Length: 256
Image 1 (cartoon, rainbow, N blue to C red):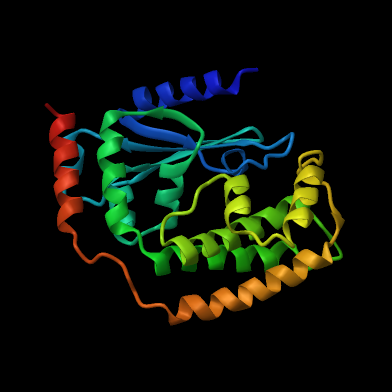
Image 2 (cartoon, rainbow, N blue to C red):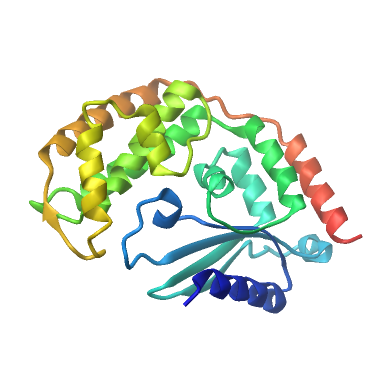
C-alpha cells in the first residue's frame, strides 16, 4: 500500500468535510526523525485555516482537528490561529512541524508563517521543552533492566536538541542523523550508531538489555541541562503586532 497516496486522500477528506484549507501537512514522528521501526505508524500533522466568518463569532472557537487514530495512521491538525499563538510562546512543536523533512502538502501561504518564525524563536523556551521531554521519557521508559530501544531515541534526540540550541542558538533539525553528526561527542557516536542499527531491525514492542554507557551519558546531560535552562533569561519576543498583522493578512487573502 502506498501510504503517501492514502494520506493525500485523507487530507482531501479533511478539507471537504471540515470546510478548511490545509496550509501545511507533514510527518512529525519517528519517520521524520529518521529512526522509524518496521511497524512505525504515520504521525501526520497539519495546519489549516477557515473562512473569515468562523473567527468573528463571540463563542469560543475549536482550534484543532483530531481526524484519525489507529495502528497505522495518527492524523490531527491545528488552526493557524493556534499556531500563531503558540509561535508567540516559542512553542517547539511549531518549529518541528515547520522543519519536518517529510512534507505531504504545503502552500505559498505557509511561507508567510515560516518567514516570521525566526523572530519568535526562544532558546530558553525551546530548550526547556526538549529538556522536559528527555527527562519525562527517561523516567518513564528507561528505568528497567530490559527496555525498548526506541525509547532511547526519545531521550537522546531531545538532549541533542538542547545541545544544538546551546551551541547554535537556532531551531534544531528534525533528522536525528544531522543532530548526531553535528553535536554528539565522538566517544558516544559508535554506541549510538550500534543502537540505531539494532533499533531499525526491532519491532516497536521488542526490548533489550539497558546500555549502561547511554544511561550514564543521559543522566549527566539531564543534570547539566536542568541547571543551564533554569539559569537562562527569558528571551521570548513580547511583540504581538507581527503575528496579528500576519493573521489578518492570511484571513483577507483567504476570503478574496
